[in-house]
Length: 348
Image (cartoon, rainbow, N blue to C red):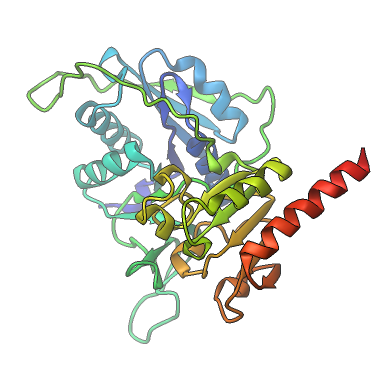
């Protein structure tokens, strides 16, 4: 493999029902940073049917170029045609870096494509940067520069691993939603659009979609919330979440929770924050009755302000909190709610 042939930072721009997923814009933001360090361009790969009109949105969020693979076989996501499409793009255009969102689609697509193009894949990354490999110079071993260093939690979140792929291209990673920042869109920005179709011949690996049933939920997506009131096992019971809901209502916020709460059946998985849940970046994050295990902290540590309430003064959550209150949440939270209500009334 001639590594010098591989140039550019590419992003799989996931779309569903002809609507670009938020993760695509997040990846473009990070791709701009990586491309700047490498003095190269950002290319979005848009795969679907009747989706060429979405290219301008990708340009506004940082794509210099958009490769459109448009074919009726790509109308709905299916593993085989999508893997064929993305692998064909990689084989033809030879990107140095290929980023894919760690969504349900990306987690299925990424490893299959990496196997087809004979490269590695680092899954569920939380940090991406350009640097040297090995990280520290080792006597007798060449230190390679301008490598993609891919960082992810390992061993259940108890350690952090930084991984490189120095001898194969592209360097591929799936990236967790919510951990990368979108750039401010540049209205009216245009990208070079190139259409590419490798041809699709259905075979016995092409599954047939008989029906698509969309889940209907009234749950607010916690990843979009500006204020989150999050509860852990320390809340004590599902009924006790009522005091957290009261606080969230007063603040115009949303209730979320830790994994222990979901495992106990108190709240649905959609509300879980953490390594095995969702990564959130609210303006204010209340961690109530949450001990602060590293798996949970990984999903909320980028919040602007973290307020912790816990009866254990030694709880790890206080290490990341901006403000902390040690005490009984059953007494503190209702008093906080009433005090905020009183301030709101006084302000009117």
